[in-house]
Length: 187
Image (cartoon, rainbow, N blue to C red; front, side, top):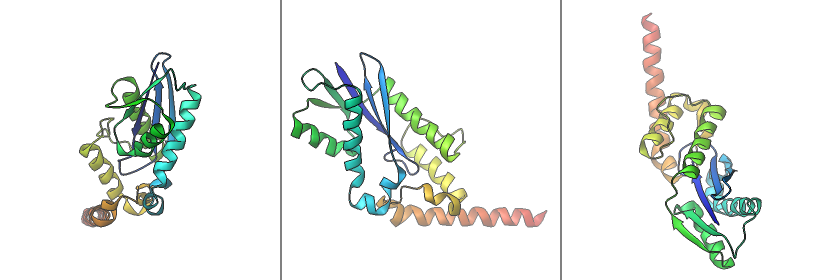
């Protein structure tokens, strides 16, 4: 029997992140939420998020009735699972690092996008389940448009947020508000 493990949102700029576990043979799918506050500066520096991910994977495996001697795990190669792999090695749990595709990958990315749309109100059509630079800038632009109200949704522990992107978001916010003010003053 095979269990796949993947994540979504752990490297994205805003919102909660999610861990997904999927038992292929029974089609049993489980989502676990990694709260946004795990990505704040203090928790990120203390690597607390990695500890939480281990706990969430343990919970999910218990829910899927994981059997060490019968099940094989395919786990995403992302660094969010570094401590999970260490835990597996310590416990003698068989696993293979893998690129997760198909049902779990689509479902976990869909769960993350649903969170962004329904919980944060990000409604742009440009927001898709495909992770990467394009999605980063969709989220960055969303934060920048209303920086004062939306910064609280940013994973503020990321080094590049503090050293580069936060200032760029403030500048973009100011430019947007200045051009908006000029347009309204012409009316």
